Image 1 (tube, rainbow, N blue to C red):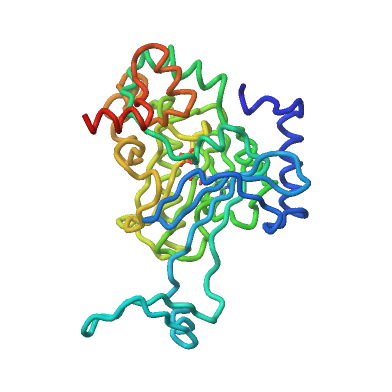
Image 2: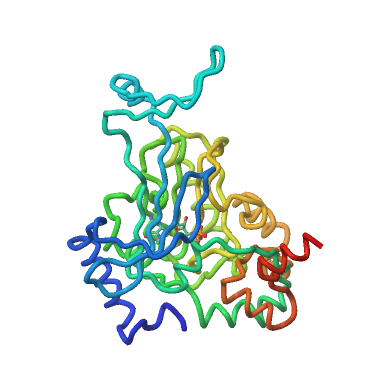
Length: 331
Ligand code: M7G
């Protein structure tokens, strides 16, 4: 079912209103009951949980991420810390440190009510690469998108100024070449070491990279030039230290461009998912319909219905269940 349609018989707009009401007034994390761990990433120091709230209908997804140290507050750690010794060997000591001072909190994202598609997005899963030809796009990916995609209400709220208004860094109201630039949900908007901004285009109906052609060049160039200038002015980060890219496939099919600090290994920057804006512009300048003609590779999780659409056509095969794998390996 398309998430942009209805869930539980409630029109999408009303569901969103309900989410906002819940988020603003009602949410207390101590009422959150963990149902299962969706995934853990020790390197990123994240844990993603599925759960629910006491006395509330609906599933919830809770994303917890330990934050980077802030240089300015590091003195608080040493000032009143209790050290618990793990081991000492010669001049090398290993300890766990329990600082008394209140340090930076845990970055917490809550999706409530969460759909099954949200839960699948954060679940640890085998991933596959699909080489999407223009015919696969037309016959498999596009029909899938019209059936099953995330609700875009949060995008429309930003564009019409009804959400995250105080976070907007730059706005261009031109209906064809305009955009809104603001911090991504994943960024606290403060530490430039993890800078992550999004430029969301004003025109509706450009689903993704696949739709881009020469008529969109003024839009892409306008975003590139104005956003790079705004980021330099606001955060002091020059364009040579920014990674400016689009995702393919994105999670949300309303065109948007990611701006991250180059030295920050943001999620989704790998070769199978990200396309530098400079390359995209250049490809279209060389061949106006490049993205309609090209074979584009993308990564997809087995739990994603898009994977199933490709699997049903015999283009990709699911991994055997773990036990089978282990048996095969031990043979
Ligand atoms: P994407 O390329 O569609 O997919 O990026 P990805 O999630 O696989 O990267 C969408 C981007 O929008 C992501 O970087 C999200 O963190 C960000 N994002 C998602 N939501 C629901 C919001 C939101 O409500 N506000 C803001 N500011 N960013 C969001």
